[in-house]
Length: 202
Image 1 (tube, helix red, strand yellow):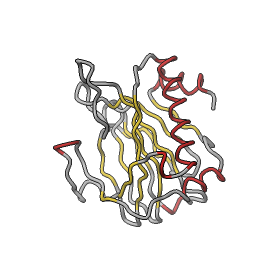
Image 2 (cartoon, helix red, strand yellow):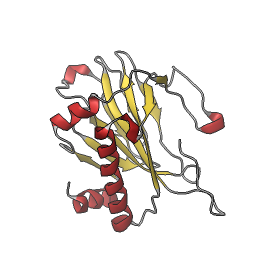
Image 3 (cartoon, rainbow, N blue to C red):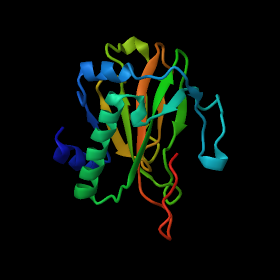
């Protein structure tokens, strides 16, 4: 991946799409690490976390290296991306958290922001897609809006594609899938607390 081109795109417009971030074979290896057990996704963090199937219906499983070597390798790639973002964009990113996401037929995630200015430590969102052979009729598009909530683009969740965008600036939604749809959603974070205390993840 051309880190200079990626960071330049984030600097100038706030988002970038990287096709073939991983090969189709690497995507298959990641899919082989998908868990047997999933939890219903919710909204909010920590004490305010709650389920709401009117807003989102996907299921998630948080990532760690124990899920297999392909997952550990993916997290290592994200660490390289974090270092590049800090070096080139001075974002002060100190951590990365991510989960597998599963959308069954009919599942969606209504329009939302991943962060609000001054109220979250998430700075840069990543979405990586695990859907080799995805077809236009399969649905599940990522619909992105600009900061004024005007439609900006629709992104197909095809396998190997990585999407990065500034977490505070782009409302987005996942349109209803017609086939089972898998991705890795992640967030590069800054530390939002003082007194040498590190923010908890998730």
